[in-house]
Image (cartoon, rainbow, N blue to C red; front, side, top):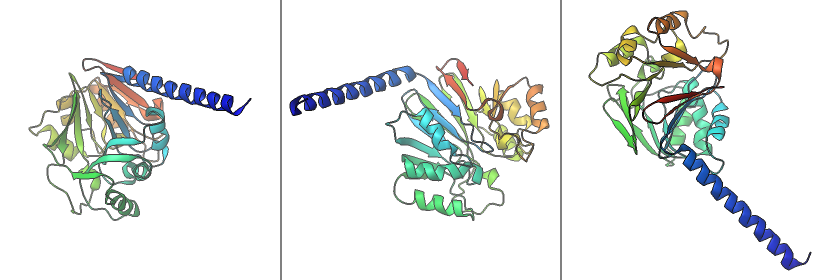
Length: 288
């Protein structure tokens, strides 16, 4: 084969590969158009939730206790996509913050939301270093604020006060609690907030009734108050929990409460990754 033929073959292959990628992008975008996808990643004894809005806006809530989140993101995001629009750290405990450290190193992140609460750990110091490197817009949030994207709204339900720079004995109770709304469907994400916080939210002025409730603190008996269940009235509860964890989560009291209110339970230790898709009117559950 002469040089001209080699060049022609090279450019033909390059062009076909480029066209294949373009076609893949078009198919990928069309397949998700007008759908909200919420994936509760199976990251063991921790939380990590990936949201993709109908317009392709990507939000990652927490990163779990390991690097498993990187593989999960690779499965959900197309191979060329190395950008996440927003990361939300509910609170700086190991089982929520650790995976985010590596995500921040490997992905471009446009916005970061957290509470700014203080924590004396090496992971916290690394988090502060990474978010302070100028790579993202960093915002401290509290109840009453809203995150508006095309077709979706996230309402911040908790914390009620500005926690930036504050030392708090129990950082679980500083968790960002939020409500995601798309059309007539909605989700509540609770972090690891305890019953005392749940009662404050349930008795507050912000609307909380939702289809999906992410159960607090991995199904610990410290969370999932009857007050919250009665106000949220969820059809489905998702529990992010590790297999055979040393804490005995989810606690039987929590499972009994959910059964009492006739709430369907989906657990990551039983099903693996749990994806819930909304078209704005109805929900579809995708589990292994």
